[in-house]
Each structure stands twice: as structure tokens, then as C-alpha cells.
Length: 195
Image (cartoon, rainbow, N blue to C red; front, side, top):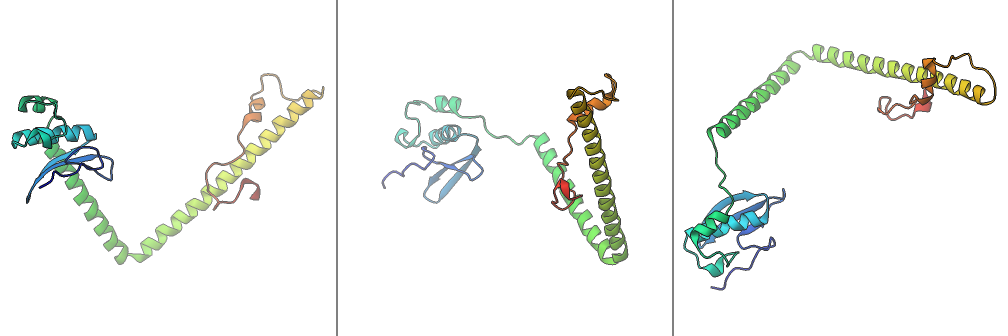
């Protein structure tokens, strides 16, 4: 049987995953031994070679023929992925949180089905809040525009040789640098000048 060709990763027994990781495995007939996923193709190839040495494969079937002993291959291979008690505990806690979240969703769906009047009230409440927030932001934006226009007019007056009713230490001079645009899309995409 001719030797298998190398994969697109450039190493024998290493494939690139869609998420960017590299998966290593050894195949022999019907046997398929998964070696895990690694950050780089080089690490995956080193893991492949260490497993190949353990299985007694010839050096011609390895990615790094300069490695001459099993111990040397094991020394160069990345450390194995271990599942510690802490890893298992974190996984169990995440599974519990997922189950709680799913149960919450189920209960909320049941509540919505049984109490449509409460759902309608809640939707009306949030619609009123959005309208009030939009009105408040528009008023604040209009106030900023007025303050900025006043400060700019006073600056133009002083630049033309006139006298401002602002004192030199008046904080209203800083209104010249106010932003009069609203970066949030609170009014359905309408521009600032549609108020």
C-alpha cells in the first residue's frame, strides 16, 4: 500500500479545523486514534509523532524524521490535555447553569401563555419608556445645540472686537466644544436635524 499523502496542514495525520485549531489522529485500517485538537499544526504533528513511536510505526511515516528515539519524541510532544477535578467541576457547574436557564425559559413561556394581559402591559410600559427616553434625549440635544450656538456667537462677537457678557472664567465658554449629535440610533434612524 502506498504511503498516504500529507494533508493541507503540511503534516501527516494533522487536519485544520474550521475554528482554526489543528486536529491530530492516527489511522491504521479500521483503527482511528484521536490525539486531540491543538493550537498549531506543529504541536499536532509532534503529538502524532509521539503516538506513532508508541505504536511502533516506521520513521518514514513520521513528520519529523530527525527524531531518533521514543523518548525524544515524547520530550518534543506537547503536554497531554488532562481533565482535572477542577475542569470537571467547572463543566458540571456550567451544565447546571444551562439547565436552570432552560427551565427559566420554559417557565417564562408558560407564564406568557397564561397571562397575556401582563405581557401586553409590560410591552406598553417599555414602549412608554422608549418614548420618554427619546423625548428626553431630544430635549438634551436641543439644549446642547442652544448652549453651543450661544457660546459660538459670543466667541464670534469677541473675535470681531466686541464685548461678551461671558466673563473670562465663565464655564459656558466650554460649550463651544459640545457635541450636538447623538451617536445612538434612538429615533428610528432619523438624522439630528429632523427634530
